[in-house]
Each structure stands twice: as C-alpha cells, then as structure tokens.
Image 1 (cartoon, helix red, strand yellow):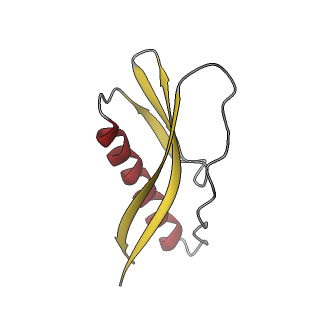
Image 2 (cartoon, one colour):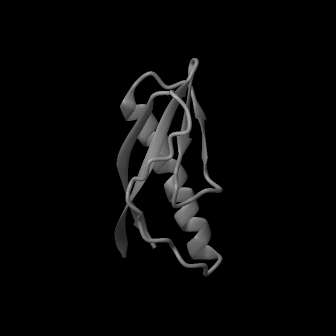
Length: 89
C-alpha cells in the first residue's frame, strides 16, 4: 500500500554548497552543489525515503511531520520548504 509522507526541510547555502537539514530525521541529510531548487528537493526526498524505509524495516516508529521551525543561527540564507514522498510500505 502506498503512503504519502510530507516533511519540512531546510536548505542552507554555504559558499558553493547547499546543506540539507531534515529536522524530523536528524541522522539524515547531506551536502550538495545543486543549482536548482528542484534538485535540492529531489535529494531531500531521497533522504526521507531512505529514512522511512530504514525505520519501517527496523520496526521503529516513523515520526510525524513537524512544523518548520526557525533553526537559523547565523546570517546565512536558509530556504524552508516541504517535501513529499510516496512510498510503498
């Protein structure tokens, strides 16, 4: 059965890289040199999909999506957005 999961992400620009932070899955995230928002969202969706599948396989609970919070600690540019993935569990 397919389910749709939607989670907030924060993409922070640091020099030429983008750091992708997923608050609900602190152990997942990464760095990319993507030029377009679409690529950042795709990469975040891939991370979310892996996280959900790993939690499901290990019989751990899948967190509910939180609201986007202010996680800014400096004057960098942050982009907050929601990413949805459809997963067959």
